Image (cartoon, rainbow, N blue to C red):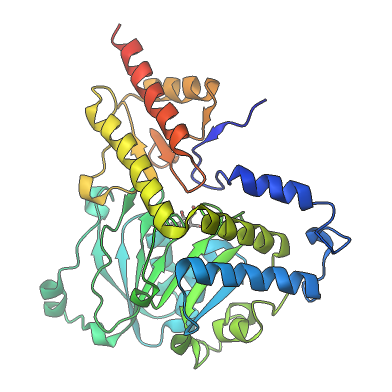
Amino acid sequence: MARVRNFSAGPSALPEDVLKQVQSEILEYPGAGMSVLEMSHRGADFRAIFADAEASLRRIAQIPNTYRILFLQGGATLQFSAIPLNLLRCRAGYILTGNFSKKAYLEAQRYGEVDVLASGEADGFLSIPQLNQAALSEAGVDFTDLDYVHICENNTIYGTAFAELPDTGEAPLVADVSSCFLSAPFDIARYGLMYAGAQKNAGPAGVTVVIVREDLIQQGPAQAALCPTYLDYRLQAEHGSMYNTPNTFGIYLAGKVFSWIERQGGLDEMGKRNRKKAELLYTALDQSHLFTCPVEPTSRSRMNAIFTTGDPKLDAEFISAAAKRGLTGLRGHRMLGGMRASLYNAVSLEAVEELVSFIREFESLQSH
Ligand code: PLP
């Protein structure tokens, strides 16, 4: 069977070049006489792999030494707890834009005072809510009192994304970038902390990248008595993400993905490609008389496009007919139904062109 066009939301497509390189090294990593899977994480060979992965990520995303990069486990989900345990001293603010930001908020509530600064829930999370600074200050929210403001920058389930980062004043911005990490250039100086499960744009499931401003973790965890040692950012930084055995194979593979991005032309090139792919798909959906994208246009995600015919039976027919053509992973999240096409870095323009032709073909068959 040929490799399919994989539009899955995650774990998702990886660049074929990367998989081939991994295949060629799986038995014997060059010069090591063994597989990466068999290496000690403290040995020289793996240390070099780890250092290369971090250096490559620093180069492509221009991360200065004032930020620490951690390669952890437990997914983005464990960061929902790690963030308040480390950073929540008095109060934090959360912007609710979907399922994951809500989970992050509920988790933070267990450890301290947390304000909802804006929520898109009334709108079914189909648009990104704006911060209403005047209403917030009337309600007594002072950004200088907030330890951080948390957002989920790209909402994988609802197909929305922040077109611009919110102005959080003095409060450091903490962002879940799981589904938009490395999909376009970003300015790390705008963030106090960003975190991402790697399994969309950056590698396999099982590695979580945390990039955190050094000064935010210098004092150690805010909730020192509660914070599990593993989740203590300062300690993990001091141990170079090796307080315990890290996900060695996952970090190796993430390093290969970072190098692939670099060879393709870096984040500028990723951004250009992703803009083009998203434009192509959304234009087709907007022109369609059968399919619609329910997301408010200025809130649309370039990574996850959701759409539907409005008829669950017809949606199921579309998904199954698409799979027969080798276009897979299009079933929408179980909370929303319909379809979702994830257009991560490893999804080529050709794959999106095929999807768009299939959308048009399916529509023309319906009208006959
Ligand atoms: N945040 C976002 C934006 C996600 O898309 C996901 C998973 O898809 C998560 C958090 C949860 O990540 P994990 O499954 O790695 O814990």
